[in-house]
Amino acid sequence: MPHNQHYDVIVLGAGAAGLFAAIAAGQRGRRVLLLDHADEPGKKILISGGGRCNFTNLHCAPDRFLSANPHFAKSALARYTQHDFIALVRKHGIAFHEKTLGQLFCDGSARQIVAMLLAEARAMQVDLRLAHRIIGVTRADQFRVVTDHGGFEAPALVLATGGLSIPKMGATGLSHDIARRFGLPLVPPRPGLVPLTFQGELLELMRPLSGVALDSIARCGRIAFREAMLFTHRGLSGPAILQASSYWREGEPLLLDLLPGREAAALLRAAKRARPRAEPRTVLGELLPQRLAQALATQHLPGLRMADLPDRALDALAALLKGWHLTPSGTEGYAKAEVTLGGVDTAALSSRDCQAKSVPGLFVVGEAVDVTGWLGGYNFQWAWSSGWVAGQAA
Ligand code: FDA
Image (cartoon, rainbow, N blue to C red; front, top):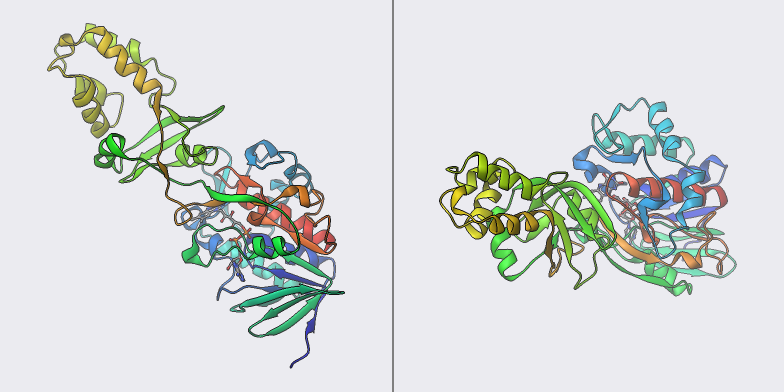
């Protein structure tokens, strides 16, 4: 039996959070081993933001994160901010731009972010080992990680294997499982930033509209997002819907405004008076995408000309456009979810460094923790911030 190889810190998972934890610990002179079962590091970074990686958000703030403890993320986000990460990106000469709502994307490719992280890790002599299957983790006086390539020991272990989203890319619940075995509780995981599905009449209406996108406000409970929404062959997607999905619970309704900032009833009544001979679908087509206008006119405005329609029919459609109550049947699940909500319960972790309160030397960072950001670069910022604070202490 070969001897275990010794390090100061072992990090499980060479994704955004794991790479950053490894770099930060390396900067403090720690000998760091970074293990991953994949054959390439940072695979989710590579596919993120349509290949351009929305690596942070200018407006990052703790209220843009979901967690059973909304205060937990504050410390890490304040200790390593979006501005710190932007400075690193600039140091590496990576060109970027703000797309919308503070979202920063590479001008070139997400590969530049991975290359930057690997260059930083190399400079800190992080020992990156890919294609290592993790067989077991135990703790005596040190943590011992057994892999199909042998055993490794260190006094500090960072769990950074992410959440359950996109199992096709190798996502597993390893960090959740190890945390649970060390006695840390979990907030039940569920898919977040995920398309919503519908059944019955609603699906019949939505399916033919697949591909239609429009500006909207999606409201779920007390939270509302104004962004684009998209009809799909299974229901609804697009940024507004993905954002709302993280707040949505089974059985709850969603409220959509398809004409944000506009007075639908007044617009329709005025059109009837000004152009009584106009077809309802033509009038609606000036307010909404053509295919949606046609579908709504057929269902709700059964008349050849605007003049044929009573005001109450116009008002009823206006009410629908401004406040469409609809109850999803479910989500498209982890196969399509951008993130995993829930995870290791923050009550078990120190907010300063993401270290387990009951297991000194054990850290949990990134998406494996019950901290989930909005769409728009927030999840990577959490990965950088939580990875960095763990790296300061591990
Ligand atoms: P991450 O998933 O990045 O890394 C985990 C690592 O652990 C992986 O390298 C994996 O191979 C490894 N691993 C898993 N199980 C293992 C096991 N059993 N043994 C060994 N290794 C294991 N966010 C954002 O802010 N901006 C964006 O533009 C996007 N875009 C985006 C697009 C798509 C399609 C998805 C799916 C997600 C995004 N996200 C995003 C979310 C973002 O990618 C995500 O929140 C972070 O990558 C989380 O970082 P972690 O390091 O925690 O996990």
